[in-house]
Image (cartoon, rainbow, N blue to C red; front, side):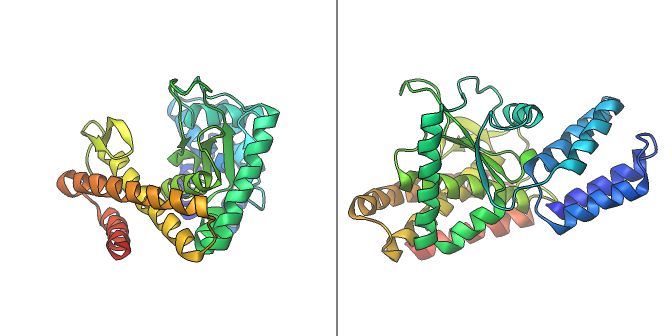
Length: 303
C-alpha cells in the first residue's frame, strides 16, 4: 500500500508540483519517509482528499493537505482512542469516511471508553495466547482502532464496525457492539480482514462486477455489491479460523468454549451462503480468485 501511495504521489508531484510551489526535495523527502515506515491512516486519507481537492481546483486546500501528510507521524504501536479524542481534521475525516450516515454513532463516555479499552486489551491477550500469528498480523495491519458508541436501545439501528480503503490502517469499532472478550477478538479479526483485502486490491479490484449489480450478503440484510459479498465471505472464514485456533489452543475457558462452538457453526453456514453467491455471480480477478481460494481451502480443511 505504501509503494502504491509513493507511485501515485510521484505522479502527482510530476504533474502539479510546480503549480503548488513544491520543491522537488520536499516531495522526495515525503515519499522516502513513506517507504521506510508504517503510516498513519490519515496519510492515506489526506492523499485521497488531496486528489479530490485538485479535481476541484482547490489549490490552497491541496497545499494544506500536503503539509498534513508531511507532518503526519504514526504511533509505534496500534493506538486506541475515541472518535473525538484526536485533532479536529482527523476527527472530521473519520466521521466523513468511516461513519457516513451514522449520526447515531457517538463518542463513548469516559466510563464506557475505559471499559472498552480494557476489553480490547484482554482480546489481544487472548489472541496472543491462542493465535499469536493473528494477533501479530492485526497489529501489523492496524495503526488506529477508532472507538464510537452505538445506541443503547437494542431495537435501534446500530453498527458493529467499519473500515474504509481511503483510511487504510484504521478500523471503527462499537464499544457496545460486542458482549464479551471473545466477541471483541472476533471483531478485531473481522475488521482487520477488510484492511487485508484492501491491501490485496491496491493495484486493482478483487471482482469486476459493477457496484450497481446487487447480491444477497451473508452478513447484511440489504443486497450488496459483489465486492461487499466477497469481503463478507472472506472475513467470515477469517473469524472461523480465529475461533478454531483459539479452541485448539486451550486458551478459552468453559463458557468461551461453548460460545466458540456455537459461533463456528454460524460462521460455516454464513461462509457457505456467501461463497455460493460468489461462485455463481462473481467475476473474479486473478488476485480475487487467489484470495477466495485460500479461504475455501481453509474452510474445507477445517471441516
